[in-house]
Structure formats: structure tokens, C-alpha cells
Amino acid sequence: MTEFAITLEDVQDAQKTLAGVARMTAMEGSRHLSSLVGAPVQLKCENLQRTGSFKLRGAYVRIAGLDPEERAAGVVAASAGNHAQGVALAASLLGVRSTVFMPVGAPLPKIAATRDYGAEVRLHGQVVDETLRAAREHAEETGAVFIHPFDHPHVVAGQGTVGLEVLEQCPEVRTIVVGVGGGGLAAGIAVAVKTLRPDVRVIGVQAEGAAAYPPSLVAGRPVALDSVSTMADGIKVGRPGDVPFKIIGALVDEVRTVSEDALSSALLLCLERAKLVVEPAGASPVAALLSDPEAFPGPVVAVLSGGNVDPLLMQRVLRHGMAAAGRYLSLRLRLSDRPGALATLLSVLSRAQANVLDVGHMRTDARLKVTEAEVEVHLETEGADHCSSVVMALREAGYTVL
Image (cartoon, rainbow, N blue to C red; front, side, top):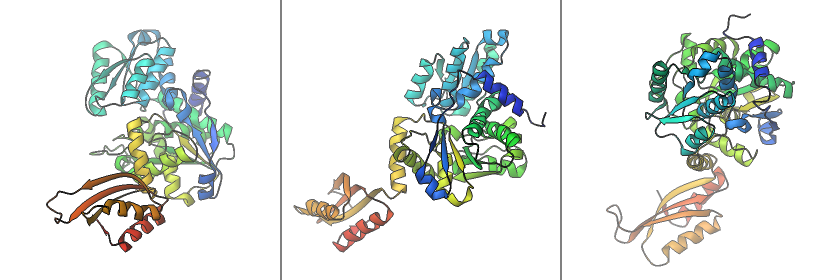
């Protein structure tokens, strides 16, 4: 036994429980990331897990551990997506009735998937905190068992099975990088890995706008953030869980933070280079590698925790990622309001090898002179240096770039 809520034996028992339920997901090498880090980098593809994320593991182990009376009462959960789908499928596989509360603004594909997996979906609240309260009230009123997304020993043990698979698939690993929201996945991996291989570094990654762990670790207790803001909704958690916090504080070597630009660039890299659809939270370990590649002794395993990304968010994130990588450039310019002026501008852009995606042309505005027009152009470019050369070409041609 250890001082923690779970042991290696708990994780190994969870692995037996999950046999035939959760897949041993693939490990894919990344040449591009390996060249940046200077050592082999493998991607642990939990985005290819059933329901599209690691969440099935913990949800199934938790529900499987209920006694017959608890199962008869049903289960209830609150989630904006991945945990909702994990609970819905796990409950269906175990023959347990499930109710899942989701925010009113949850992406339609995630709502539909949760229903398809067998849950009754109830939309309540604008943010997850309001949804969480509604789920707890439902549990008190009906006797249904509340399934927490990360703050329960059985859930943490289930998520820890990812760590056992990493050691089996990549026994030479020296660093494991994993996204951190409430902390269940990182805590489970840390217990499994550090017990068997204390030499392996486990690094957690949080979004800068939802980084509750760094101040909490300094304080020595879970500290709630006043607000959270990040595109990575899978790790958008304002307070660490009590169960995982103690484990992470003792066993995880470091918790890093990454910017929104790094997250979007990581998502774009996974799509373009690895041919993998990964949500922003799932791409957070890749964002950490991109941000500071020399900080991770290799071989490195980056855990891609999920791939359930809303298509509309994907569109916005890819555009943001292209801009961060210098692949997308938006400009406003002043030019003479005369016939052929727009065609001349486009010819300059063509010579500069910039691909025009969209053009907006405004001729009437109080800021403009009678003889002026303003044009907004959105361009596809080849990188930061190309962006600079495009701007220089426009200025050399006499245009005012705003």
C-alpha cells in the first residue's frame, strides 16, 4: 500500500476490468517532433479510443465497481463532451441507466454521440459548473450515483491503464507528457509508471488560461481559479481534484503551461504531419514539445488524450494555427478608388506568391478620402518569412498597409 488513494495493483485490476472494453490504442512515431526534440517521439493515440478519448477507461471501471443496488438506481454525470460519452457507453455496456447533463451550448455532435451511446441527455446551464450542480441535485433527488470525471479512486485507476500500455509499447521511454485538467489521467499514469519505472519523467501540461495546478502546488492544496479561458475544453477545469492532486504533487515531475497559439499549432501539426484528428486538449503535450523541445529527454511519449473536436471549432482553430505558423495572413490596405485598382493589387499579391482566400472591398467610410478605398485581404502564405516578404512587396508597390 502507498499513502495515495490508488496503488499499482488498483491500476492493474482496472486493466483486467477493461479487457475487451477499452482498446490498447496505437503508438505512432513522429519524425517531425523527433527532429525537433532530438530524440524519438511517440504519440499515444487515445484519440482513437472508443468514444474518441481516454474517458471510457475511468468511467467503465467506476460503474463496474458499483453494487447491484447502486446499479439499479442508475448513474448521472455532467460534462461538455468526452466524459459524457464515456459514461454513456460504459453504462450501456454494463446495463445501467444513465443520465448526462450537458451545457446548453455544448456542440451538437457531442450531444448526438452521447445520446447514441444510450444516455438520456439533459441540457442545463451555460457553463459546466451550472451543469455540475444540476447533476448533483439529480443524484440527491433520485438516488442515482454521481460519476465524477476525475475525482474518484476508481476513475483515476482506470485512466492509469494508459500508463501501463505506454510501458508495454515503449519500454525504453524516458519522458511521458500528458495534458492535465482535473488531473485524473496524469495521476493514474504517474502511479502506474513511477511504481514500475521511477526513472521515467512524467510531465503534465495545462493551458495558460486554465492552469490551476501551478498555484495549487505552490499552496500545497487545491486552489480554485477565479476564471478559466481556453479553447481546450477537455482540460478547462478551474480546480484540481482532491484525489489526483495529492498524487500529482508527489509523483509528477513538473506541470508546464502552453499558450493558445501553441495549442492551435499543435493541432495543425497533428492533422498535417501525423494525419490524426486531435482536439486542443489532446494536442497539449505536442504544444509543450513545440514550445520547448529541448526540455524533454527522449525517447518521449506524448499522450493524445482525445479527438472529439467540434467541426466549427476545428475550423477556427486551424485558421488560428495557420496564422500562428505564418501560414495565414490578414491585411487591410488603402488604395486609389479607380477602375482596375483592385486588379493591380491582386497582381502584386500573385507575384509575391500569396494565395488569396478572401477579399473585402469598402468604398464608403468616414475615415476614407473621396478618392480612396479600403481592402481587407485574407491570404494563405508559406511561413513567417513569406508573410514579411508579402508585406514588403505591397509597401514597395506604394500601398499603405494598415
